[in-house]
Amino acid sequence: MHDFQYKNDTLFCEDVAVPAVAEAVGTPFYLYSTATLTRHFAAFDQAFAEIPHLTCFAAKSCANIAILRLFAGLGGGVDIVSGGELFRARTAGVDPHKIVYSGVGKTAAEIRAALEAGILMLNVESEQELVQIQAVAAGLGLKAPVSFRVNPDVDPKTHAYISTGLAKNKFGIPITDALRVYLAASKLPNITIKGVSCHIGSQLTLVSPFVESLAKVKRFIGQLAEQGITITHLDLGGGLGIRYNGEEPPEPAEYARAIKQELAGFACTLVLEPGRVLVGNAGVLVTKVLYTKEGLKKFIIVDAGMNDLARPSLYDAFHQIRAVERPGREQAVADVVGPICETGDFLARDRAMPKVASGELLAVMSAGAYGFSMSSNYNSRPRVAEILVHGDGFHLIRARETYETLIQGESIPEFLGR
Image (cartoon, rainbow, N blue to C red):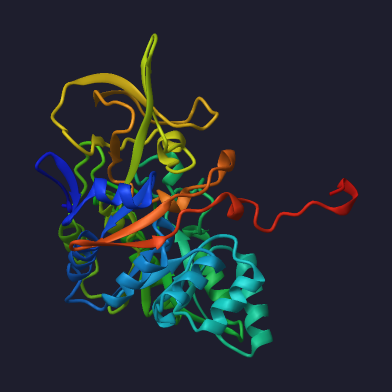
């Protein structure tokens, strides 16, 4: 459920008319609903209310500091995968004891910053990374709290590019090797073992892969206990899917019931890392029609491109596209394409679309996750504005970039002349 609804044939976000925002800030822009974000967080977090748990929003899905602050204010933490996301989380006021740090390529500087900040734990993804963490922690005179990301070799039945729990994926330590790595870590003087981590992929629409991976991790935790290694935190990652085009993913309550049933009798604190399920349907990308043209195909050319929303080009992902005004009009099959100089620059292909004219607005739905956070400056295009609606007001939470910001940090050496 989301708060983008039509009123008198005009799309509103909560109590704000989308055309009013476009008039104020120009197009394209990302538009988020505070009410939807809040409701989605509550539905997910409260589904686990009766057991010890921590809901850590996956910052990579939508990293604006205003959204991180919103979730932190609701009691959430943050799952990060870079030093930049650590900086964002700390700037947003997230409690460092509610930050978990995942990712296969943490640098020594990033590890140092995380330890100095006092985060909850680092999710270690390789033996060489463990050696690096030990060295950094020793240099700081600290004990590094760690969890190891265990790869359970479970097929999440999702897109290959967002599958992370198979043996062929780059993530984590194979479950067959993990006991040896834990035993080695238990002997390191600057390492404190806190947990086990397991994340199998994104946009999962079935509960069964979660349960299968959890069953494997439970057995592994039992093996650790036999070796005298106590686990206090079990990080199950995220991955719960949303509706883009007729999918029927489990609701958070159904997901939670299955997890809690499998965890019955366990005393660990559960760490959860939802991303898409919280923000995906809480945001849209608003774009303006520049031109239409017809030949062998009909094209609707808009001012947003693959640099603004990469998912259709990268994954052939489906996003509903709606006319912001007069949605019930006649339709025709068309491609919705952007201004980027690539044939792969499209938002929709061979789709029944409202017959629109230059200057009209379209809303690309379900764009709150991996929309702005994956955007780029390709073709030297400034990244778009981000707007957060709260009731009947809207707030600029990221200004549109300018041509000047595009070349910030660049310089021409003297030998090239003035």
